[in-house]
Length: 293
Length: 280
Image (cartoon, rainbow over all chains, first blue to last red; front, top):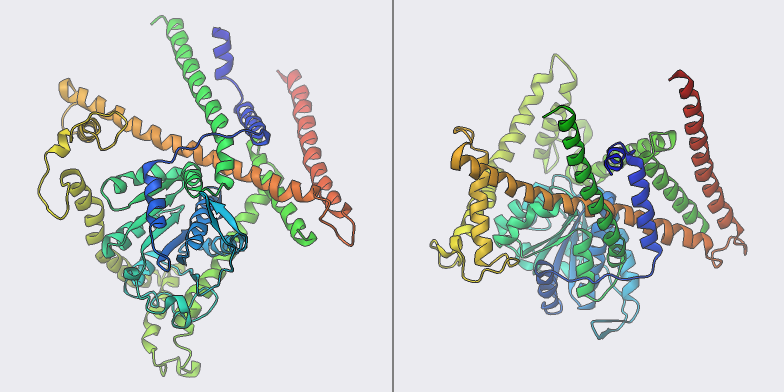
């Protein structure tokens, strides 16, 4: 047994990588489902959006780059489709330099999905055409997000005189009479970086609008204090948060599919941590014994 | 999926596998992928900044002026001031003139500090303190029950009394750990030790989320390789001039490259082992 732990401590880490990859691939190709239980902080976002009357504007900040696509793209898909199915308007901005590509790609895919009649949570939604400028307005990207967030608090036209496609905001039907954050129901920031800090500090803190966050797993834990203080009304954390939102809107996507792999992968990692710790303590005890301590 | 898009998807799959190959060891495929990402990201960022920053915010605003008058006759001539300040940043490349770059830098830091300090104080300090003490912001006043709980000691309920007490004691203990003006002995030392445990629980939560994030990235690549690449390669409805074989050819050529490299590495690995043995 001691020999086993001794060998374990000297195991080439690449065997662990390989084992984890094999487990993930087996889980991916296997046909099973894992139960998803939405948490309160995710439910509040869903309930807020769901309770809005048709025609209200939801502002969604797509502040992530392709390296965060895995966790945040499913959130974008679920929320934007929910908004459009509910006939809400969506105002989109992207303060991360690679974000416009993410937003543009998501908008095209969700627009295609809206063309089909679908049933979510027992309610049938007829397929319809999504019209740029009527159902949504994509403001695009501007550098220096702190100044852009402050500028939009005065007037969206200050940092964004035109939308992403070059149309002046004043000639966009959806933007008629829409001046600043006072005219949107809430802001949902989907972020993979420190832009979230600025949305809280320079946005919510300064202009007092309802703010919800969709975060990568790495970031999630550090933003919970803002939930407790009421500065944000909801948080979706990582792929789990995205999967919970997909369950709430009854629109299964990549996040729920991915959670099938997360479960066995986590079990393997926890087992490795346990075995590694046991090996560490056994190894330390053996060394102490050998040193006569 | 049309064939051109499939070729690009195949290239994306190749770059994905090349990146993962680093898990085994550094190799030319990984180096290629790494340099490609850095180069593309830098180039893309420059173009994005040009088209979303300089063009709309500077050049278009000065467009009604004349270049031979240095745009001073533009109706928005004052945009020349930030342009000049921005250009002064480039003096950092000269040893003799680099001090000039301190002017725009000083202005930038001054404005940033002036904007940030009040907002950050409110955001990270005042509001967090209020949230700890005050229940109803409309009716301010310290609610002492926040410290010992509002009744109910449900272990898993963040709002329950148990959690409130734990958060309060944990916050104090964690602060004690970072208080170095008094030796960590006796009750003070025990409180500091409890503070370490609280910090470790916090780090553990962050670690758990981080593991989930990293696995998520791998899952996304699995989904991409399966749903965007393999399934399209195998889908007989994808055709070029009525034939599906070009898709198959590209797919299997890629597989051949991957398997060929794996075999090459294995041969290298075992042959180097064989050479190393006599030296020992």
